[in-house]
Image (tube, rainbow, N blue to C red):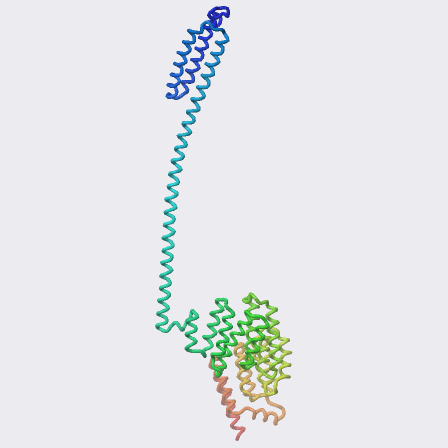
Length: 459
């Protein structure tokens, strides 16, 4: 403030004093900037300041008498130079730091790229070695299989478990009449989902098997029918049935088909048949059984098969109605066996009381049929009714007395001594298994009593 007071605009040295004052202020600002700059830049700024000082001295000496306008211009130039110099130094420092960091990042990226290349090379080598090991293992397995195959062919065990088409062809060439080999060959093609090849194998079997081997041919026909039933259509199944009937016993063909359909119904009920609905399976089986009974109505085996199918599935009312139809269609001499078979089925799948009623009626009409007695006894024993079996033996050995003597004498004469001997043996064996000493002694005593009574009647 003292300087400002001493400086008077009317003084003749006012311009030079003002310039000196401004120069001093500029130097102070330069010193502050130099303290903030690096050493390298400060040296440059010193040289620049020295140059500016020399210039300013020369200008002061020569231009002391200039006007205030020129002094103001000079001050503006000096301030502009100072400002520009300070920012330029800072920018150059930032540029250097950026260059340094850029170089470092480039070097690090080069190193990382080299590491990636090394890792890729290692991975390629590992993959190549893994592939080579897999190939070597596959080759060893193949060689082992070939060795086992050769040893099986050498000792003859290859024919027991054929695994290829060549094995089957060699096996069939040695024994073309074996239906089991043909059926296995068909199953081999079915395992490969080649149904047409399986059909062609069956047709080859019909040509290769001798015409005298009817049972072997029927087995192959059964396999073909099974194939058509499972993989074919209704039309293809019927066509195959018609063809099989032309080359085999038609009744046997229909019986085989009915058995297959019956097994299909059982599988559908248990849930093992995924592709066949239960209702559809039952309808197909009913239709086939009805067709067989209509086509072979004079054959008791067909009717018995149908009765068995109905009783197994709990359709007792339909079974009894079918029995009446069977007795009307069958000959008289076939009635006893048909009724006996139906009574046995009743013991197994129906009512034991109904079965006893049927057997008692048959024995009443045919008392000399010992096979009926033995079957009746066996069913009672199997059913756990030992006392019922004993009562049956007692009733036959000691028949109830009749009011009419002639009727009683007629019944006594219906059983021969040979039949009674077989009857006592059957009774005694049953008591040995299911009885005790007392029951066995009772059988012996009954036999002795019968012999005495028979001897007395003859004398």
